[in-house]
Length: 272
Image 1: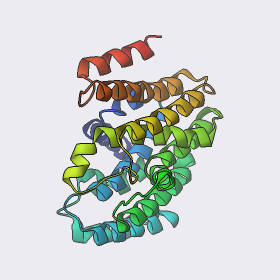
Image 2: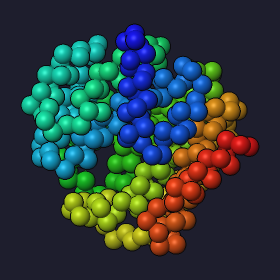
Image 3: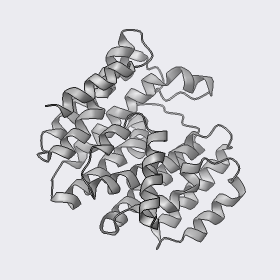
Image 4: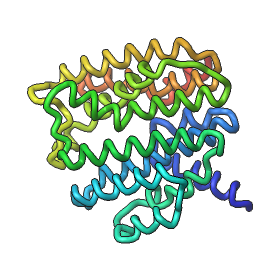
């Protein structure tokens, strides 16, 4: 098996292991586009695992993320990357330790965009880790959700344009990311609280975050209207529909959508 085929097999396996939401829509993408989005997802998942890691001190998280950000801004040096991981090798998950592989897997023509967005995200995550994710108001929430999710929208917008010149609005893409992230915040509220973390702005209740999520998801609805390529449209519509379904489940007092409901949502979109 060639290195490319080996990496492709590993990347798809890692994608399946790390994302319930995105594995299905990414697996439906056309060749070339699938590799770019898989690489992008895994690069960002790699740094997200550092931000969320329960066994790392805040200072270690911030230092690691800042170092990664700086490495990704230069011509990529895998040895430098492995050097900063070395002291934490026993703690970090495989998806993080193999960040260099996910970078190698990326189609060269779009790699610079993916590295830039991942670098900005890592720097933003480092800053919020150093502030212990204390979100005072909606402006703070907007800033935090931009770094951890809005940048995903920016990066995907760049990928769509690279792939077939699909033009989409980056501000709406940022809102799309914010909408998905705020749904995650609502869904994980109790789990986050058990770790002593609260992503709700001061004074906000469930209904306030629910309104924030729905407002941003409405902008995500506008985002997808510009997309004509079917494979990209399916990719965007699936997580959007799952986000709406999750909000409905949460407001009905459930923890999440059932597996059957998820399958039904995907079938409805792909079958259209």
